[in-house]
Length: 453
Ligand SMILES: [Ca+2]
Image (cartoon, rainbow, N blue to C red; front, side):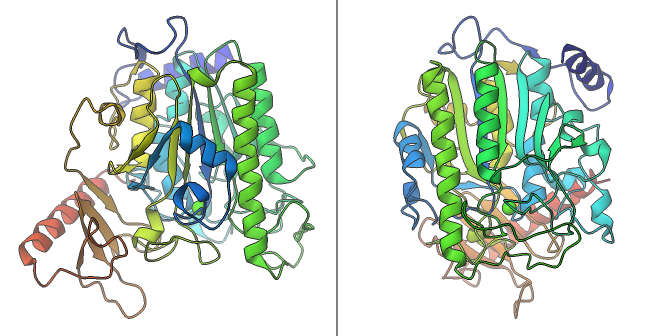
């Protein structure tokens, strides 16, 4: 483990563009224990919508997430940087717009698709690499979806341990991917395990926390739930090796299965928090829960418009709750924020001075109230709509370029503070604002394209 960390550290300091080697600073948050920085656990749901879970008034009761929200901070204007799986994950891992990494869309499981051979390149610095270089034990349990080839394995991107899968969707019981291949890994080797996928992720998480209770740890839990195939704990396996199966799963009542999948994930949140409390780590551990994109049509993004794979709010405004009992005051916040902000914020909380490039911002001073909210711009353009459809936020305003269905990309403008459901297009009344935002969007496209392999 020490050897691997050393290698990563050398990698980071020798590669151009990496910036100065990350190193602990003297201005770690005063609340952290003097002898160790906080542990960090990122729990990411897959395709969970804004209107799915009870802390957001959703249709599924999630008592453990309710409890997390009561003890933590609930974001109401938090966004995934992509509207589908791989792009958001690339942005989350690096704090960079995923377009810079050449991952604007899904990395397909089908080997006939060119994207099957792409992934997160070695020169990009991940949050796990920086944490590991600063003394953290690191692990990922769950869905990677940042490359199928051996060189993209998470153990080569800063994670000491990996249990999980590399494809976009997996049978929750048989752990077979949509192409009929086994896809359950232990580090860089296929290694089958029995068990319901969501519970397996949780069991490995609790085990890791117990093993590392005496040292700082960084734990990334990208759950599969509630992404299809729709299978609750008691539903049978659908997929067999090289078999014929419905990708969505065989259950007719998909809403029922979806609810059970979310409930199993909520149980997992409860088991992780219980482990922290049992080991007296709860006050010294950041637990940050969010989703990788909005819900598909089996879930709910209410009151938002649109679904996963669109740039409407329903595609990327997602639940996000952070709990760090000793340092983050409970409540809710309307700060405009992004999965891109997770890395810079977590590194700040960990007392790590990282000088590499980041598109995200450190949210800590905004959360603390030490800085006033800034008027911020965020950009989207991804998964097949890249360079065609797109969206941008400029403070309360959103520019939307929709090329789906009958829409041919005529710019639309919405005031999200007045109209969160994106019903009243204000473009005709605000031509100057539309033009300013279009200009900014084009500048962003050109800038990230200049950094795209
Ligand atoms: Ca997803």
